[in-house]
Amino acid sequence: MHGGQFTKPCTIAALSYRGFWKSKGRPSQAGIELDAEAALRWVLTRYDPSRVNIVVWGQSIGAGAATVGLANLLKDDEGPSRRISGLLLETPFVDMKAMLLALYPQKFLPYRYLSPFLWSTWDSKTALHQIGKARTSLRVLILEAGDDEIVPAGQAAILEQVCRADGLAVDRKVISGSLHTEVMIKGQGRARIVEFLKSF
Image 1 (cartoon, rainbow, N blue to C red):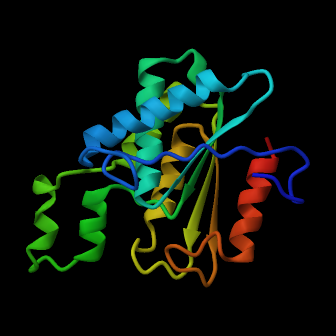
Image 2: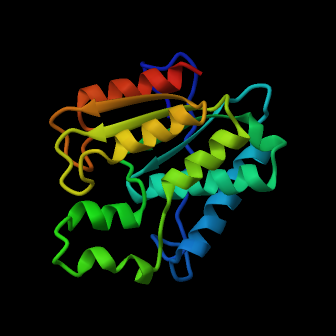
């Protein structure tokens, strides 16, 4: 990505998970975790560590894939993975169970009790805890949509607390007036992302 807002070129490596876009296979959390880890390993071998800062970026459920994938990478290999400088989480949620409880808080409704039957968990909270234990120098930016119609308020704040508790440098910003997929559309959201990327 090249633009007037950057003094140096910024390259984006985007992953098409199995079962999405042109990628073959069927999507599952186990498979997507493998895809995310493989993509991170490819980036680490593709770019020169002395010249490139690497930021992992995930949006919505992709924020879960980003945090879990990065946590798996750090768990398996603490060598080259230490070159990753930042983690950008756009409209993240804690995990699928927390989403169920937030969306269906009424105890008389059955949905809140269905978490044991979920096919995927995308537990960003636990993943961030693992990242913090393995890598305290990583910087995290959490962007929350002010009018998010999918992720309930409070989810991003919980993740911020986890980062702080585990020694991760974290900054959380609420992008006012933005819906779930509008953080980058809003000028404030774009500015926060550019500021974060340029800081490296």
